[in-house]
Image (tube, helix red, strand yellow):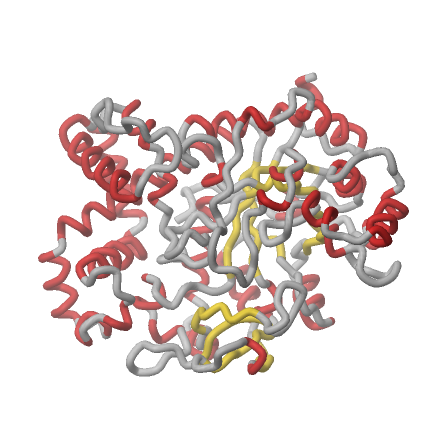
Length: 503
């Protein structure tokens, strides 16, 4: 699915020099939090800062707002479709946005996209119609299953696929053929939604790339149980005959939770996947390379060994480590792709075996400065222990903001942090941003909340807490007038300014 004749750059080519980027999911953009004008404005903002990387979270349609619990591992999130741009191209009648200048209710968004479909059918040019047909043809391997999955899900009032009648649950061919005919209108609406999403996403990526900005995406290792991929590829997952999960994913007790994390995603049946050369993974990686220049693989350690929890267990404490065929998987992927521009999210319980797997394939790891001040001088996250082939962060979407993190430290801890950082007169989080920029890591990524010096009430996610996550959004008036210049001076000082010729 990668554009014919176009080769994705390898991580070595992307990290051939020192770079800087900003972490901001499109849903956190001002206004409607979508792929409209504010996304283009944000690219321009990155350029003004000297940053050449925009990191996003997964762009998939979500169950509950979490981009890590998707209804698909490949499809785009229709909540990110800009209705304003649909008006601009003449498909959505003027005035439909009404007073919805911020968050647009799902029912109204759905209504507007249906109107846009009618407008497309009436007003689209021959070239636009051809683009739509080409999109469907090029994405047929996953698109039809996803569209039928979403149509059946709507027909069953949002019930999970393993709760559907057996004929649909078990994908009996006659039942699916009949459903495809009966639900053709809903199926075609999903086709159109996906066409709109990828049309808008490809345009913003093109705009960014033309200005020297790379898009850094995110690929969760696991997929949601109630997702199109699990329904359509049941043999690839560790499931009972009725579709229920036999074992599920998570992690043992860690920094984020005393009882571990019970994610609920079904585990893969790696033996089955290996039989066809990991075809499911090849399709998924191809889809990622179509959307992004660089991809963070979430929970990389799960490719070496994963925490297996019985589905009926109430917490993650009762799990066990099981070996995974990461070496065979990545070797197979390299036979299909010239290179893999991947970054390993190597956080958590990292063993020498995990490190060896990462280094065998040359994947950069991650260094989180908020984790650097526990322990002694041998802490891997301290800047003096960093290595060039890595990505350094002040914090990630799962962390508190750096200011929020610092405010929760006691006096002794705060003093120890500043004794290490050295710049006692520089306020948080800028002292930490400076340390990240000074690191030998080839890429530094700073969450937008840290550039805005926001406290812990602005964090994106609290692992283990079910409510109030994934909703943060910034406003342009939160940006101090001197902030882009301040950040750019740091990037210049530490050799990370991507656009010195523009000065």
